[in-house]
Length: 349
Image 1 (tube, rainbow, N blue to C red):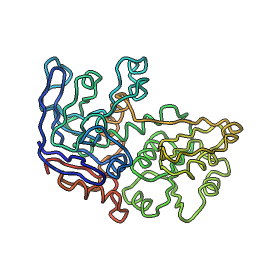
Image 2 (image 1 turned 90 degrees about the vertical axis):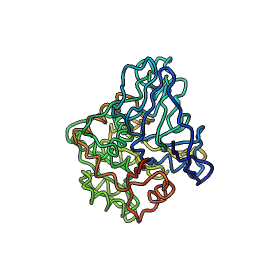
Image 3 (image 1 turned 120 degrees about the horizontal axis):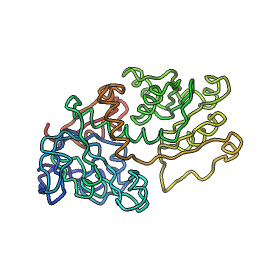
């Protein structure tokens, strides 16, 4: 089979590799689409390590082969593949919260070969967990690649308190920030989207993102503008969906009393944020959350939202590339002049 093999910093080689067959309990999936994630960019630049030669985890395809004993899926099923593979033994995995695995979960595209290939072999323990998840016939494969990032955003919303007439500020207008904005709107919020790049905000407007107010951080102060838009109260929910220190500090400043603050995006492990004003958390009684990946429950909810078009996945997909042009696909995602938002690789194109 053909695969994009990561051979070193900023280098893929597209070549023929062995297509593995199914052992007992395995499932082989023919990849029809695999989208490029922000973490794939960090892998490409050598900022994030993987244990396998093939990355890519936002995967949609069809079941090509099933190993002995597999009963949940059959040949030809249209599926997405859950990224996280828990230990299956700890109390959280047994509760279906494999993204919180106490023994540190493993992941497709990191510890197991991913979807930048024509086929992907899903190992037995992942199949047993339920990582091969069926999607409706009506859902196009490229749109189905949005299930994984949307599932992560859904996980981020789990601990957040939703009230009538609440205001949400999303900081960061990448694909994750935009999906958070869409979820907030579905929950009935007034949505404010802030970003330091004006061009990205213009893109959000062009694709019809459901946002009430836009804040261009290159032209104004986030804290002052949020106070203006909320009559000085601040936001009931703040989603920090960008990997920058200043917005992570400001997130606490723009939060209203009794607000939820979600640190959805991480920052460099080599340069963490060491100082925040915890008095803001104390006196405003803030609820501060983190979010890491997702589990099957979140995938099923994401599939329903996209298949029902409550969230229109199509508008987020801006570019498609064949496997041979994976480096060009990554470059397009990093080049703001291309207006790339969600870039999909088709291994059969």
